Image 1 (tube, one colour):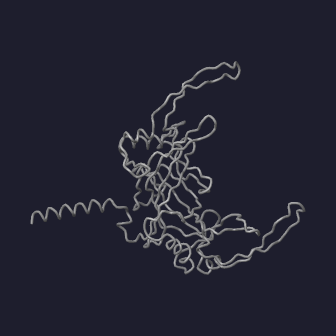
Image 2 (tube, rainbow, N blue to C red):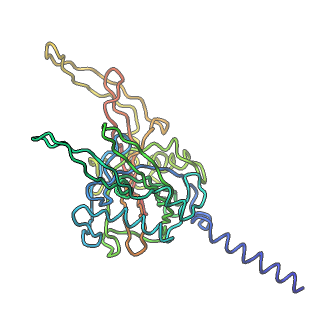
Image 3 (cartoon, rainbow, N blue to C red):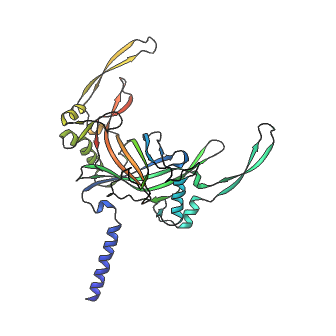
Length: 353
């Protein structure tokens, strides 16, 4: 009997340990879909953890909070990268290789590299005399970008799309004398966001916050749980058509001041349309009017979504966190020859995250 109790206690404690290590969606039946994506963001001047927009995926960013005193930003101080690297080297972060294997401190140090001293030749522009200077290269100052791995998830109870940061990967970018650059992604640093915490940039612990407006395709999303197409179809297409979810008009880029629209207006936006296109002949400068017929829109026509997100760096937990503000299906607007002119959000669905 004692052996049985000991075995039961061991198995039960093992179950509790394993269960506690599972991601948040295993404990929440309301989470019906989880998808994983990765994005690369580039640091702005002074390593302020402000992300520059990339060429294709990201269209616009803006800083909504920045506390220079809390982040030690003086001159060329690289606070964020130094902070992350120091935490890694002091074993305060779980670090994994790009293949997902835990890394030792020596492996991490080898991946980052050490400070090197090189001799460079300098020519005086007036006297033309050559002199030699010692150039010191610190790998931490070459970390100029980060990959961010995040999960998107759908909450059935809130009927809303959310996101959470899982890990970040520092990227070394070395600029050579000939103008070329080399890129090296080092490793993944665990940075698990508390999904139950309602992040706000007014929180005292948040020392940095950024807003990003992205054009995203979920076709290549790595599915973790549930069905991606079914979830997005219900969220941005079926539910707005039936009036089961609140939709807002497309008021420019940002939906903060947008007015709500009913299902009749949503269905009107999705119905077939006839547009008048006015162009000018480049040689005669005469005005030409053409009629462009647009067929009724279905969910399969939405290859891209426009997602408005907020990003936070929480100093109290040393965590990078993300929060979905809104998502909107994008309609392709084409010219009379069928060439893509631009993409426009038909409406927005606000997130309850």
